[in-house]
Image (cartoon, rainbow, N blue to C red):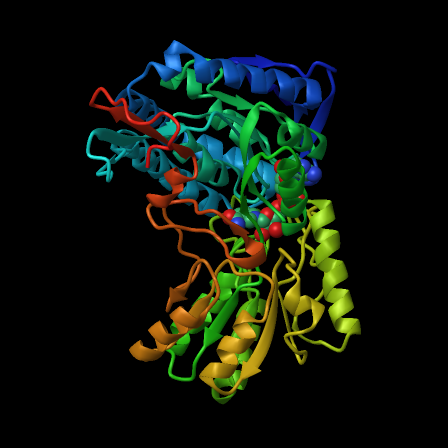
Length: 492
Ligand code: NAD
């Protein structure tokens, strides 16, 4: 059995307490690895290492171009080991190997993009009213960044924050999820080989206690958090109490709206991709499908048939379409929410129960589930399930579709299916969400900004905007004359 340790100051170390926790494979139910269990003392050690590295000549003294090169080298090393790391992710979270491998193949692009951006961060010269003054800005890193991530796409989600943070010249302490830490340790364990000075990248595996210690540590300037809105709110208030900064990438209840003029085959595929890909364990899951009444029955029947045919099974098999639910608490949440919806009057169109896969009796299986017959105000339509559960809602007019779509406390993503160009862009403007996909769904890449509005969070990852979140501006004033103006009057 593999034994993973913490990565602190360039070394792999045990937790100070010597305690460990198990990594359980959700497909087999077996423990396949152990992790060092970090507590506050270990987090403190990691933050100190990161602070020391931040001030070190080895990191600070690097030109942005050379710093960027380190990101490129790490990208190359990850590309070489993509298959190995993807297998580790599957063992940890049960997502499909083909999906994890596809992610690992593009993850280097994040490092290439932000590595290339490192030496394109420029200040400005500002033409002041007082012409004797040269005023310019310096764009500087913040310091130590704490990165806390969930279990659903561990390495990809780490990169969303880590790549721009490092490109800007910060150092990082990463706290992966207790349900999926191994792939992050494997990936960031390559930092030394890539040439990163010790302490620039640290990883503390552990539970919420380790996350809290990171959030409350005075040495951490900013927390970049990806996870549930409940934890995000707690982190924002805890960090706020010590005036720490936060960016939050939280959950969603994203609408996938199909108008009657849509290309129905494409819309059908898009609705499926939105909710059953990754077993719905995706922050951008299109968990509310809004169908126009004219096509409601036909499209519902189509997706009912497709849901019933989804192949559950070994996530390593090419033919598998849905793996298990990633962990026991998550499966319990899915069951509870569907049972409550049923009790509240929802009609179960498909699924609605645990599933069985003969070869994996201990696996955490749940049937692809479709519900309708309830309003948008129902809990199942308002709360994030984070599982393969789709709520379908009818609408009649464009205005009604927009109103239902926006009637949520979340605002992460949205999909619109129509062949009417004007309508597509009109609706895109009206939707309150960080991402709008027109005639596609679940598309994300390194150079297009991503993030939420409302309770889906704030701050943007990906795209050139992302690096701004890890920089601060200093204004430098240089008097070019021998100024002797009245010292008791402010220089304006
Ligand atoms: P979670 O909020 O339970 O945990 C996320 C991380 O926070 C874990 O590492 C956990 O150990 C840590 N944590 C828990 N309590 C903490 C505390 N009090 N202080 C500090 N850290 C703490 O989320 P999860 O169940 O792991 O992930 C699922 C959630 O993540 C869903 O809501 C999903 O929508 C969201 N998500 C969002 C995005 C995005 O980009 N917006 C991407 C993926 C997942």
